[in-house]
Image (cartoon, chains in turn cyan, purple):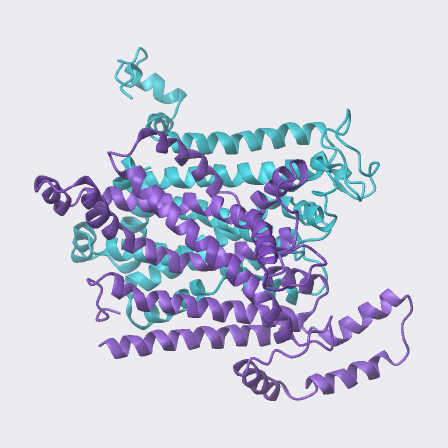
Length: 306
Length: 334
């Protein structure tokens, strides 16, 4: 922990160093040194990103369409991940699927956190009847297993879904958890002395929210976003595995659906299921580690706990 | 005070049931689905030609299912049906009712879920408590990182890997199903054993993933509890290590765990549905999977409704016994 480099006097004049690297990068890097969980998570996500970048430079993702290569080929030169029963190049499927799955998670997760932030602030800061209504809806909503409602919503769409529609379906419930966590955070922050001081010195509600509360909640919002993205990806892959996903798009979850559909497992077609399972698992592990790391950042009490 | 809390909590339960029924009723209708027509068309297509008089058949069936009445009448009838657990006929298995198909499947799901949840909760909580305890043998700490990483993976993906490793490569466990196909379910020792071996892999998939989560939560709670004054006091009194661990630390750290259990049930059941699908386990999840594949809307709605209601009952029970576990919780604040 006590490495010398942080203590070392800087060889360059401070002004020159700052012009090369912005200040926050330095403090971010020195923070990362204390938070190995977050580093591990970021490295896993970076690995997936690099895999995708290299992959999209080397393969034509049009080959993720059915009938583009010979069916049921094990991995070989030119077909690094083999092909499936419909003649999709599975490497191209993985490369095309990663950004699709990630897009679903990003759209749904960020929509969820956005709505959750607005509702959470509204509910906690103003209280009263609004708070009661929002709290009841969230309490009821969280008691209901989300996947069940999502199944009803997804089956209500006639015909196939697109990737964006899929994201919106998942987003319909993605705001419940963020609303809850953000509401409880605002409730505790509201009581702090500096907020009281701000109110006494004549700041209005919106000003307090934007100038006093949000800056202090940024780490919580980041943590909530990561968990919401992860939860949205989990929900979307679950729906896809059940056969409610975008049938024409080779998302990671749809590949799992076809694996189950054609019983690839008991036929020994390992190349079909191993890559998507590995990528999905790494994606979840990366996001989970980052959210643990952010938790540590947001909640210093936990700093020694994880 | 207690009565008003009780009434409020039970009211919340009925609110959940009502919302579940209403969502079930209106969502498919907003999108303008016609389940009967869809099913008939699908069957006609599979038969290779479009039958003449399909529209008349649709009308006939709609009258039978009561779909030709005004919406509000349908809604009231629907609520009444739900209250009497009448979920209508399954569209894809027509003469059979949804309730029939569900009652067959539910024992499997409840068996699998209760067993795995109790095991995972107990093992995970104990492991988490031991991990936070300073006098724990060191080798236990090695279990923690892999279990934490497993926790991030969905149950059913681990299930797929387990099938490949332990049922396909090394043929220790059966690949799918709840019992050997062809045997007649009966209460003999052999059959019970058969059920047990079939449940090992699905259970393992759920337990291995879930343990890490419980351990993580418990560990954090134990660390907080260990910092409390009463712990220092107990230590100063010279209490035995086991007493300190069990009665001072564990007992107090356990309470928030129970709350998380109530909150986690929804996740657990969503995950278990997919585990059953992967293992073709004869529970509610597999029935749901087939219902979705055959767009059997009544079956889907029946399952969704009953899962929500069952979960509502489970959280209700947990909420009501929580104050029994923790005397500090009074119903006053609720």
